[in-house]
Structure formats: C-alpha cells, structure tokens
Image (cartoon, rainbow, N blue to C red; front, side, top):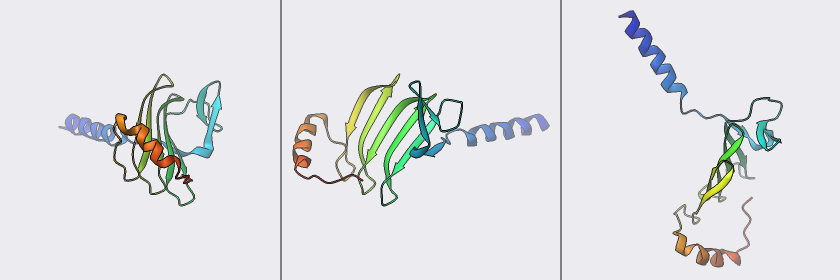
Length: 125
C-alpha cells in the first residue's frame, strides 16, 4: 500500500509540474552564438519571452526550446492574435494571420486583407 501511495504522489508531482512553461520578460533575452539565453544564465533558454504594449497587453510572445525559436505570436492592441509563425530548426515553416476580431484569415484572402489595412496605418504598440 505504501508503494502505491508513493507512486501516486510521484505521478501527481510529475503531472502538475508538466505543462508549466517558464515565462520571462523580453528585456531579459540575450542572443549568443545564434542561441537565445536569459541574461546572465549559461543554459540555453526553453520557455516563453513576452513583450507587452503600453496598455500592459501582450504585444509579442516568442517560444524557444534549447535556445532556438519554435513559435512567435503578434497581438493586436485589443489582445487578439494577429500573426502566428511556427518554426522548425529556427526557420519559419508556417504563418497564419488573424483579423482584429481574432478570426483566422484564409490563405486565399490574405492579399485582400493586407490591401484593406495598408491605408489604415495603425500602430500595434
């Protein structure tokens, strides 16, 4: 019975610690030899860097694994997703765009979407 309880405790600890990604402010990001680190640390960074806009909402969110970019997201001022880029081995492999309501824009409508916002020189700060 003690063995089962011990195994359950270990399993619960493992499950609760999984899925919690480290999050750091973008100002702590440091590039060394094409690898991303947190300033002052020796181990390549795994986690998320976040940059916020003047309203305190996310502006940019970037995920790294072992110091190499995996995903980046840009947000509108209203905190809805604007762009999502996925990377493999540090190279972009897919890009998705969303309208200001957070709805995915189909690939065949992206060109029209950019024509629409081209004249609307709004800042995303």
